Length: 169
Image (cartoon, rainbow, N blue to C red; front, side, top):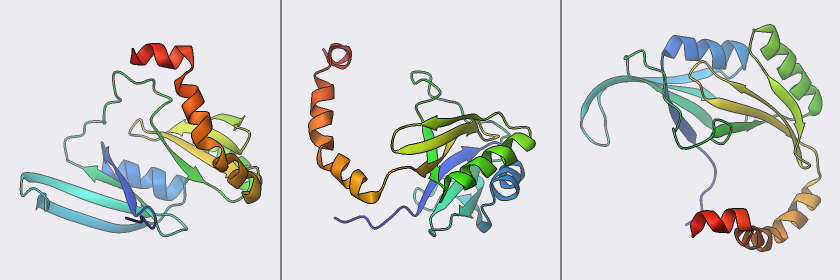
């Protein structure tokens, strides 16, 4: 199996219009498709919903389901709030700085710019409580390839780290 690319990643949203405003008007992702159905096509179960898709420059999407219940999706109770997030890539550090300014001007609290030694990132939450990261690459592709050639060995070594190994015992 060879996966070509991401088509979409879907989340639940509290309110489709509130979500549209955030992703389209603030983040600049155009709303490209809306599906309104009463039954789930894959299961046949009755569950009226609106499914909305916002397109990124590469053609992939972020999608949301509004179930009409006005309920914000709950975070995982056994996972720190900073772990589960969606990271979206920008083209330049200038774009990252402008995005931070635009978000803050809209009253959104932004953490960062954080240096991760291969990307710089900012972090914030959408109206649904979903943590988002905007990032920009800070190293060349050749350096990323070099790091990738050693990634499996680094992962294996990290699994032997006492703090990690003790959680698996």
